[in-house]
Length: 275
Ligand SMILES: NC(=O)c1ccc[n+]([C@@H]2O[C@H](COP(=O)([O-])OP(=O)(O)OC[C@H]3O[C@@H](n4cnc5c(N)ncnc54)[C@H](O)[C@@H]3O)[C@@H](O)[C@H]2O)c1
Image: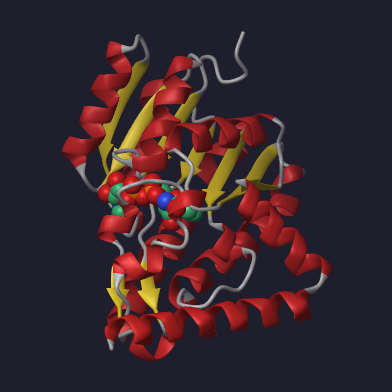
């Protein structure tokens, strides 16, 4: 029997990309999945698809920036299902550009969704998990939450905070029988790259060097579930992501010099193209 069979699982950002693939794979493995998203129609479409595959799936309209709504929805879910076993705090948005080009509103949006959305999720499920004496909270960060990368200061700040929050909580929660993991994928081929806000940089120019390194959301979802099943503290996904993390920990100064050099070359190329 699958580790996830009959588990009650809430996936935020479940309408698209990694969240949708995660929910679908969880449904295949016998979990009772709730696809939650700001995009209520997208969440229902993901749940319907999962039900067509034989899963017990439902959808939930949810804005993770709204703590009260998050708490109400989770309270309702635990009432109807009797418990909540796993929360995937997956919803997130992207913002890219050099710090000097990022408006304050972009900073606020990314912190509100990527960091406060994760905090709200924990605030909503943790009291239930403490009462149950079990549960798993899996927060999605990014490789940009482990290593410093240029053009991502706002996004990276939100994701570094999610990594710190998750590590800190893991130690506290373990003695209550609750597991906490943080998920750090490399580049995954999802709609996020269409919805990212690009400031002072062209989407094509930014993505063309990394296109070949993208993985599918389905492969990413399988690797996430393997990490969660094994209760990994930090689930780093993708060869390039693991290599960067390893290099940064092994030799931070040369790594930063290399990243700086890469950025200067990238900027030169862009200037050259626009002349
Ligand atoms: N795609 C990548 O390369 C990549 C890499 C590393 C980490 N991540 C992270 O993975 C997570 C999922 O990203 P994705 O690539 O699947 O993106 P995506 O855009 O395909 O999906 C994100 C989902 O989150 C939802 N969402 C956005 N704001 C919300 C809110 N306030 N409340 C509820 N739902 C909201 C969107 O409607 C969307 O369905 C994000 O946290 C992202 O930062 C993505």
